[in-house]
Image 1: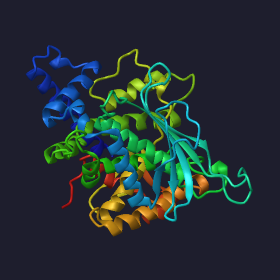
Image 2 (image 1 turned 90 degrees about the vertical axis):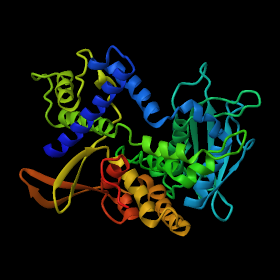
Image 3 (image 1 turned 180 degrees about the vertical axis):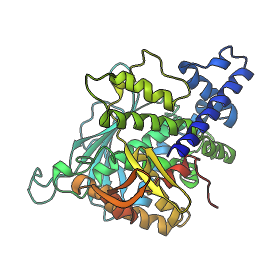
Image 4 (image 1 turned 45 degrees about the vertical axis):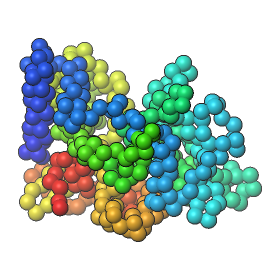
Length: 422
């Protein structure tokens, strides 16, 4: 474990040295002693320099209507559903809010959702989110026999259209829409008739981001991206070299981001297993101690990150191969989403039949079962290495889809931390 942790730390050191070298080449006086507030700025400048990507310059290729058409078409390919505009069928809270109907392959409605896409600073908070309006429920249906259909809402904060110019999105906003739509799909495609476990209800925090992060992967799938990235004036597809740069930029500073997750996980485990209330260390002391081991730049003494550390759920993921034993502390949901997408890679992303079959299986397990099946089962594999006893967390719903326990290999490969096989 220590050896592999040192590999991550080495990658972080390399990332920081890259930032120092680049900022120095730009004449930055702070180059030799970068502070916390310098890292993000110079990281973005280095990313633009290294991959020649400017988010604002890519906006003309991502018009809102084209992105949504491509997203809905992807949902049809993967899950066999049709999404149609149903404006006027339900009241809305703003003229820009859209209402959609989701239909199955027979044309019957199975769900509905609202989408509020544009920023309104005077009345709408920042960020993006999805939540339920009503869940699927047989008990609460009008006739008590057929289930009440689920209704979701998605909210984003992208730039609204101006005059004849449509809403143009950054690539990150495209990822955000795909992400929130993944949450909405789990709520809308549930087959649970008990409202308390239907859709996103009852899904453990460890796995709640599985569908959303899974959908993000399709933003980097060439055919999917090329179908939505059309210049709003000329209709030309985004240049191939730009797509390749987006693909390469995906793993930019992967060592730093991976070690950041290790810091979160280590801190979470330390506080839950070893912290003694009213003991010699405060929770802030523990944070400082863990951070000094996992970060190149020590935290500021007044850092109160823990006050906002409320949503991170971590698990110990263990895996073994013939050469070495490694214990990774990662967000389980990232492991699950990457491993789920790798099922499509294994089936063949260019094989339309295989993609549809795998998508159907994903729908019938991850999206359909939701919180209706107990997802966690602790199993000891009985192997020991020194003082370590490896425990596999079996996600039952995931195992039904994937046919095995989750593996971190796909996540590490997608993040550029493992070699890519031909």
